[in-house]
Image 1 (cartoon, rainbow, N blue to C red):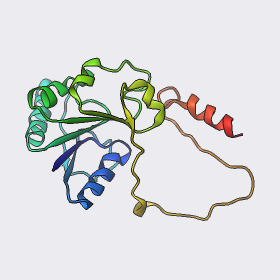
Image 2 (image 1 turned 180 degrees about the vertical axis):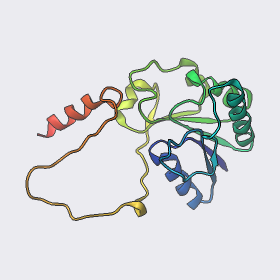
Image 3 (image 1 turned 45 degrees about the horizontal axis):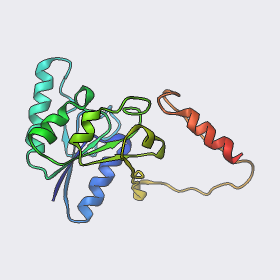
Length: 185
């Protein structure tokens, strides 16, 4: 079984690739954007300038070459093309089974593209609050590589401290965080 993961929000895809490889699957990761946050991928298309048509075609050709050889495409987060139009190519024309895995701001408070429901085999969301935005989705908690975590002693003195540092309070759904905190106070 050859699984190709497309993009890597919150390191979810790279952790899934690692776990799938340990189970004996042929799993790899291609990214179209890294934002300089990580380097644990197999194929990097982020250096291609997609502001012009030539760049978009170049990314499309390279993705086609990778996707034609996979058995399943696990698509993470933001679409490569606006409105998930590239799903027509991958699922519709190439007839590849596509898993669409939503991670947050690409879908939160937005209309779900109806045709995507017809073109994907399964829909996942990374957090339960996204279930309301993605019809027939299943919550798949984010995998974490425990080998990369440093543990420290937890202090039990004083009140519990919670840090939420969103880049955009509305997009990151700060209201839900504040609501959850108010329920445990």
